[in-house]
Each structure stands twice: as structure tokens, then as C-alpha cells.
Image (cartoon, rainbow, N blue to C red):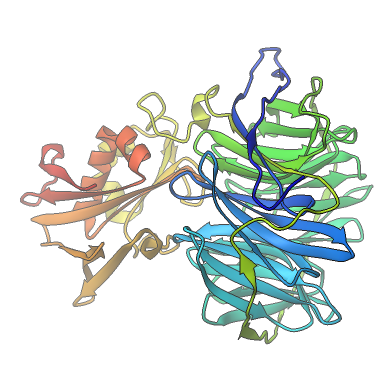
Amino acid sequence: MRCSRLLISLLPLVLLTPYLLVGKPLIPEREYVIRFGYLGLDKPVSVRSGPDGELYVYGLTEAFKYELQRQAFMVRVDKGLSWQLIFGSKFSEEPVDMYVSMGKVYLFGNVEGSCSYPYMMVVSRDGKVELAKKVGDCTKVTGVHVYAGQIYLAGVIKGKGFVTRVNEKRVVWTKLLDFTPSVVRYSMGYVYVSGTVDGKLHLVKLTADIGKVMWAVRVGANYELEVKDVEPADGVYLVGSYKGVHGLLIKLTRLGSLEWAKYLESSGEIRAARKSGLLKVMGKSVDGKCWLAQFEGSGQADWYVAWGGVDCHDLALKGGYAYLAGVSEGQGISGRPFYIKPLDLRVSVKNLDLKLKDARLSFDELKFEYRDRGLKEGSYDQDVLLIRLKVGMNKPSDFCSLTFNEFPRLFRYYAVSVDEEMNKPQLSEFKGSGRKEDSYVVALGGPMINKELSWESYGVKFFSKGGHYAGFTFRGVDYVAEYGRRDYAVIIYDCDSMRVWVGGITRFGTRAGLLWLLRNPDYVAEKGLVLVKWEGNGVVEEWQVTRVYP
């Protein structure tokens, strides 16, 4: 295979016909497959979606020609490849994970050696390297999560497990763990860290601001369990393997107690879990097939599909689409039906008394050599596959959009104090009240009420005057309220968590935002962020509310 330039080909994909457990067929619609290769043996480790629907694939490419050459690669895909970046020392890169946050792409990995160290790179969406950092000495990163420019890393430092929060400038805090973590995830102001110890799963919930332990649990069974991914959503989902050959799926409550535990017989390990609407998990079966399944909140399989010829490594969701990044196994993409029947699994959940010690972590500048084109031909041929499936069209609750058919009746609301009192007639249209950390929730209130939301990550900066919020700035324009006469609200729709945030400068703005949302849910779903204005005299009426952005 010539790799002096990137090879791209759109391939036909034959997906198997999956079946619902009730017998009704459902076929996720395949839209395209992209195939590309570099040195020789190419393996993706992460696929992420960007704000404009673009995709980023991050992985490892290696070949042996006189000596082993290993480098990290990243590509941007817009229905075809837009640009590529290959970097490293040629011998020792180990990519770990990648995230897209605040208009930037964050790459993480380890440089192996006698004293290994993690690296962090920040790349613009047009492929320019903005920053490279070395994180710690004799350290290895095993798990990563990035949210609103804040970075959470888990790994091992000098033989001890650790979790840390950093940003592009400094280390905020670092805590030592009594187990080796493999996964770290951020959600709604908390950090979840998990790892496997002697066949049991350990899970710790910490506050994101200072790393304070909220609770810690150990999940065990009669046979060995192994965790591969954690997805905090309407609870905390842990996925992995059971006995080494069965997929493992466990749901805990936000307080760390067991809700249910399932295993998928002979399905192989579950490698990734993502939740947008309903939970989707991806794995590799014991006979080598890549599979994707969707689960109801009770742990029952809604649909499932599997195919051979590809070894899947990561999963991303965007809108009603699933993106699978894997490796071509050379015999074409095909297979036979794959059946999933979730079976109940008896597990024990024990609370742990965990006290974490502080630690210091160095954070230094790092230089990388990188290229923006393919490398020379390698000795082996193994290509990367990127598959896009339309998975959200067969179940209304899984649309990544709000429609009049499901909004607001399938949503709950979160409101406190005066926001609830002012809007009782409108809130009665919702399914009921809920928690703001749940999916399918509309949360009312600005930054004083909803402090967990990073408003600035959406470009909105609230400012105060005289001890009260007086306005906010968006794209260089100040929007200033006049109490009881003029107000503004920000409406934010987060597709991945299926949450809507409505924040006014004062109570009048919040009510105005809610009224506009109820009348225009499809528009909010399409744009993701909307600003509205109200002008009146102490009573907010629907006809007084107008849109000012976009």
C-alpha cells in the first residue's frame, strides 16, 4: 500500500438485519464508510464529533522497516478527509484519548520509556498545533475527560493511582488513589473515576472544584469483572466484561447504590458506552464481530446490530447518528444476525471509606515534530474504517431534536422558588419535576441557580452590579436588563445530555425564555443556542418576547 498520501475510499457496507426482542425488525441506516491508512498497521483509539458535525479520529500508526516506527495520527473528516496530523518520536507514542471542547481538539497519550510521561496537545479545528505539554515524570495516563476547557486525567504516578484536574496553564489539584484507574468522566460538577482491582470494580465520585470525595463503592460478583467505560447520565453506567466473555452493563444511582446489573451472554466485552437519548454501547463478540446496541432505561435491549470484517475501537454520537471507528480486517464487511438477551447479574455493592492524599504533578512545555501528510510505505497493511449509521429515526425519544410530538410531554422541569411560582401553568405541561442532572430536563434559572453549567463555554458571560446580575455579554455585545421592564434570556440545548437550560438575567427573563421555548422547540433544537428579549411592564406575556440571536 502506498502511503505517501492518505488513501480514502468509500466502501459499500452490508449491515445485518437486527431484530427487536419483540420481533419487529429495525435497520439502522448506513450513510457512508470512509477507509484510510498510514504507515502500515493503523489503529484508531478515539473518535469525536465537532460542533459543526465534523469528526476527528485519533490513533496509532506503526510499521517495521529496519526498526519499529510508531507515531500518533489525527485526521479531521467532513464526509472526506480535510486534513491530517502525524506526530511523535517514531518509536514510543501511545495515544490514549481525544476530546473536542470550546472550539479546540485535545489529544492525550503517553511517551513510553524507562521513565514514561504523558503528553497533551491542543490543536485548532483547522489543524494548527497551539500547545504541547508534558504532564508529570515517570507517569502514565490511562483515562481522560475534557469539559469546557477543564481537563481530568487518571493514571499511575510512581506506582500509585492518581486523578488530576488541569487546564492549559496549570495543575489545579491532584489526588492519589488506592487503586489503578482506567476511566475518568466529568458530569454536572462531579468527576467519576473507575478501575478494576482483583476482579472487582472500584468507582469514586469527587467534586470537580477541589477533588473532594463524595462517595466510593466496590462492585463485585462471583466471577471477575473488568471495567472499560463509565457514562454518567440519568445514573452512572459501568460497562466492560464479565468472566472475560460476556458483556457487562451495570447501572448505579447518582448516590452510588445499585439500580440493576446485566450481562450479555457470549457477547464479548463492551468497549464504549455513550448516552444521547437512550444508552448505546459498542463491543466485540467472542467470535470477532463488532456490534452496536441500544438499551432502554431498565436495561433491556431495544435494538442491536453486528457485522464482521471490522474490529471496532470507539463510538461517538451526534444527533441521530452513531460513528464507529475501527480497523479493517481485510475480508470485507459482512456477517450474520447477532442476538442480545440481557440477563440479570447478581452483584454486591459495598461502600468504601476512602481518604485521598494530595500529590504534586509537574506541567512543562513539550516539543513535538509533526507532519501534515502521509508517511512512507510500511511493511503491513491494516486500514482504519470510519462508519456512520443513522440510529435515531426509529424511536421518537432518541431524536437529537425537540419536536412538538415529544416536547414538552417527554421532558421534566427543574425550577426553584420564584421561577416555579411564576410559571406553574406552563410547567404543568411537562411530565413532572426532575433533577437538573437528569436527561430530558429543562432547567430554569441563570448562573446563580445553575452554577454547574459553564455558561462561558457557550460564549455567554453574566455580569453583576450592586450584588445582583445586571446583564450578560455575548459576542462582544452587552445585553442589560431593566428590572420589571426589559430582560433577556439564554436558551441552551445540549444534544448529548438531552438537557435544555433557560437562564434569564432576572426572573422575568427566565419566564420569557420558557415561553419562547414552548412555542419554538424545533428552532432551539436546530440552533442549539438562542437569545430572546422581553419588554413590558411587570407581567411577561408571550407576544412581548422576541428573538435577538441568531
